[in-house]
Image 1 (cartoon, rainbow, N blue to C red):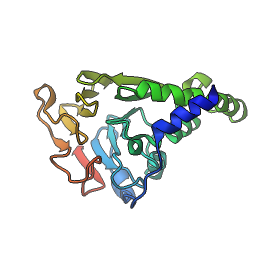
Image 2: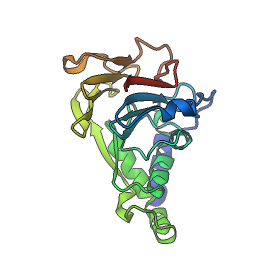
Image 3: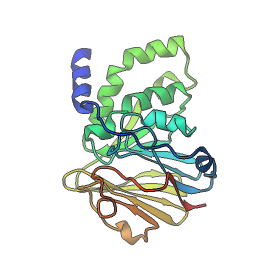
Length: 240
């Protein structure tokens, strides 16, 4: 049974990507992001073409895309353990870093289930990962005693059906809405204190969801690298 689960996970995760790495944000620029700011950071040390951005707003850290190297990217810029992970697609280069993100963030003291929101199939992927790691979770908990409880290790998956929209995250001042294309790709609208950021993958719906004026938009009409959300600066402050 465990072998079948591991095979299923390996199939979903796919083979490793190759290509140049994205450069890291300058340390001074990262430190300049205050807890009350609304900022978008480029993920360092992930493969070019892999969708990955870190949004910091209201003291929360949200990760969009989980390619190989995403956890190292968070550690390199000294970002807090993420409060939520959002997948625009289940393409292999967008999910290959999920295992380390799950396990390392728990070991570092994550105290709640980690929200994992994405297209249809996200709950299946999360379930297979959690099942595959069940035995190693128990050993880690007995030997290393992570700060969080044993039952904090798994994901809290939320799958957005194709063609539907849903609020995926909401703290009152910070929210994330998802709009799934008929083909499954998700466009995200991140709102914080009246400001709005749109992230859309190639193939995802590009729209001003709910008529909200956008302060920043990253999608296929704006960028030329399919699948990723690159921009020139390592840190973009939407609101300080």
